[in-house]
Length: 157
Image 1: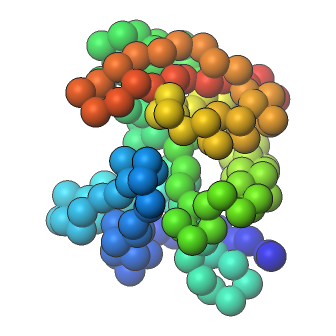
Image 2: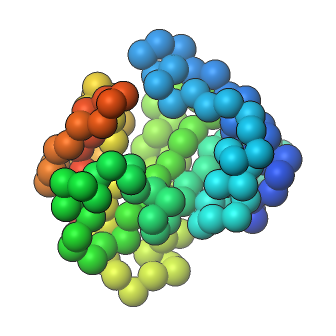
């Protein structure tokens, strides 16, 4: 599958906000709202599409990739490139994650001078944690919100 980056549009954002993941990943489900659309369209989110122009996923960098509550625990004090991502629900758990994540990492390395990346992942999401570990990410910090426990992971690669 060939992957491409596109500017986040309201159409892509609407599709993303309507994605429905099966439990326990339903934690990542969103509601279609003006706030949700504004978040995706007006921040550093990019759409990932395939050769047929189908939306495959998205990623973001910067503050948009952080869980705000983490600031209370100081987990974002070190200067790094924060990244966040999501894959269309029907593509999860099918071995596509490595290709998708590698593509995103390559795009980020093309557009930034900083080489230390940080991501925040829900602690229950063992599939994602294993994927990130396979790419050299290591757990750095943990913190809790009202909804979940999170881990920050970093990589210098």
